[in-house]
Amino acid sequence: MNEGMKTRRSWKSRLLELAAWLVVALITAGILIALSENLLPNNF
Amino acid sequence: MRILGFIGKLLISVGFGVLLFVAWILWGTGIYTNQQQDRLADEFADLPALQAQGQEDQGFGGPPKSYEPGPGDPVFRLRIPEMDLDTIVVQGVGVEELKKGPGHYPGCNERFSRPLCTDLDEVWPGEKGRAIISGHRTTYDAPFWDLDRLQKGDSILTETRWGDFEYEVTGREIVQPDSRDIANPVASNTGELALTTCNPRFSAAERLVVYAELKTSV
Image 1 (spheres, one colour):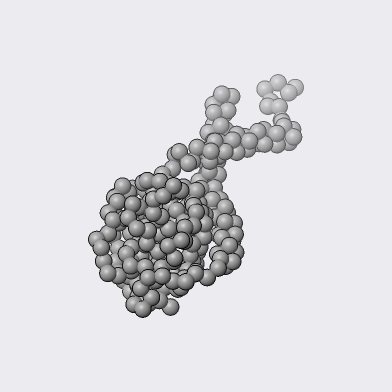
Image 2 (cartoon, chains in turn orange, brown; image 1 turned 90 degrees about the horizontal axis):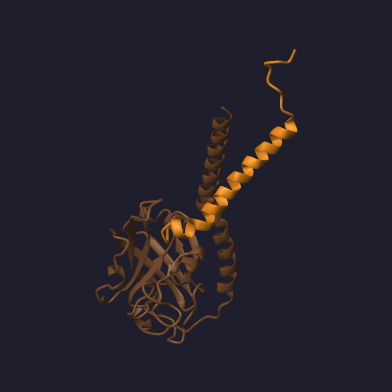
């Protein structure tokens, strides 16, 4: 009966995935901030 | 298809991280500077008054020779009405000092080493010679964001512990970042102020220098 139909994901699962991607974004920003003193010229 | 979806989400996420970084650099760094400025303003207000030394009879006067503030210490208040700027200037132009606010270019000694200092006599507001102040244009509250708006005749006020001095803008120029000429001015019989920052905005390709001449001691 359900063959060929996509399984709907629960909102909890979607929220968890969103949180995981947000963590990736924060880690990216954190790495760039940590490196910024080397990346950016003085007195920018 | 699943791998493409994963890569797409990863790129969006990393892109969002880059945007957060840019927001931090442009505005977040100002939070630190504002906190430091609040502290420096209190410290500056508590500093004792100093007797001006030098050519007071001619409207000039600097701090006593014993005045030797350390890196990051508040040294004077800088007001530029045309830029809506009212800020505490700190001693030194190193990375850490400029995070707190505009920095006064110091003389070389055990606490300040080349190239971020001058071998010539250190010049303070009110003294003959050229006092140099350097500040951020884009980050750390961007105190010199509008430096290019200054025109000939605009007023620059310095409030020091040995007196208040008014300068008048005389001109400006754009120099290469490694130019050392502004720190080695031709000897003049006047008091001068040179304000320097990055140019253009969001770039460190050049340096913008605004010159001002001592008009009055207030």
